[in-house]
Amino acid sequence: MVYIIGDTHLAIGDNNKSMEVFGTLWDNYMEKIRKNWLETVKENDSVIIAGDFSWAMNMEEALEDFKYIDELPGTKYILRGNHDFWWNTISKMDRFLKENGIENIHFIYNNAYIIEDVAVVGAKGWSTLNPEE
Image (tube, rainbow, N blue to C red; front, side, top):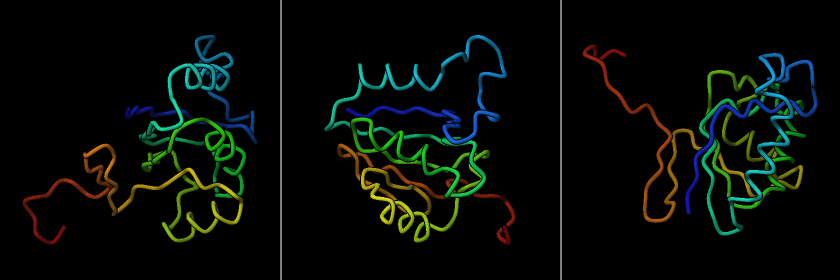
C-alpha cells in the first residue's frame, strides 16, 4: 500500500516552531501523527511525505525529525516543500542519513522511484512558453 502525507512540520528538536501555535487542533500533533501512522502503515508499505517535513533550518537540526520518521513502519520518500529549509543536495542528504544510521528514508528530487508499479518522479513537471526558462 502507498500512503501520502504532507505538511508534518515536525519540530522535535525545537518546540518553539511547533504547529501547536496555530490552535488547539494542532495540540500534540506529532503524537497524533505517530498514533495514526502506527495504526495504518505496515512495514511493507510506502509513505510519500509530500513536503514541509520539518521546521529545521539545516540537516543537523532535522536529525531528531528524521529519526522520528525512520522509526515508523514503511519505506519513506520525501519530496521538498517550501518550508524545508534544511534541504540540500541529494548526495549530502543521503550521506547525512547514512552517517546517522537512517536507512529507510529516500529523497525524491530530480530522480524517480518505482513504488508498486508506479513511477514517482521528482522533477520540474511543467514547461513555460519561454524556452529560456
